Image 1 (cartoon, rainbow, N blue to C red):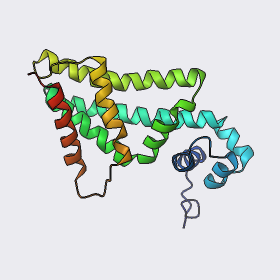
Image 2 (cartoon, one colour; image 1 turned 45 degrees about the horizontal axis):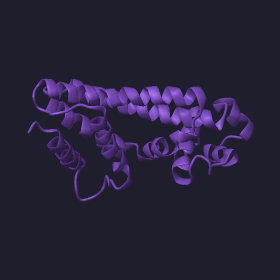
Image 3 (cartoon, rainbow, N blue to C red; image 1 turned 180 degrees about the vertical axis):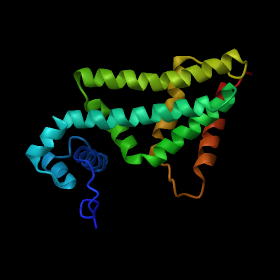
Image 4 (cartoon, rainbow, N blue to C red; image 1 turned 90 degrees about the vertical axis):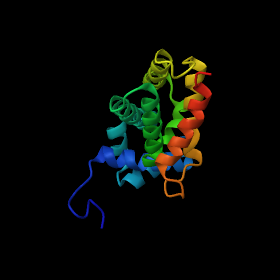
Length: 196
């Protein structure tokens, strides 16, 4: 029995976002049709446009929502931690858990964000830069504490490049617990950043 049949109707916009993230993750942004999105959300096409405006607006909302969640979770992880190495491990752990918890959102954000144009592309780039800046601040703290050798843009982008594509092989139900995966990744990354 669906939530609607049980009398706990999910808000229309939430239904649309939920359907869209699954369809975009499976078929890609360009491969998803509006009729298909409406059918999956159990809403007629005309009403669909009332709630979302455009397909690109829908993609932007999905990408923005994902980065905002990752940013908030990352900030909380850093705030709960002490010195830079501890902050880095906590941030990597939170990143891996976010990927595991929100895999469809990650697939859409990583693969489809380039379809955004104009102000939407600018806004998403700015938000993603805030997330990048969170990693930069942790690495810079590590440099100031004598724990890391560098916090240059190349290092930050390398860290994020490795972490962001973890979604392609990460198995949340696999034999290695998520925290162990994250700790191995943070160990690899910190070895490369260690003061020699």
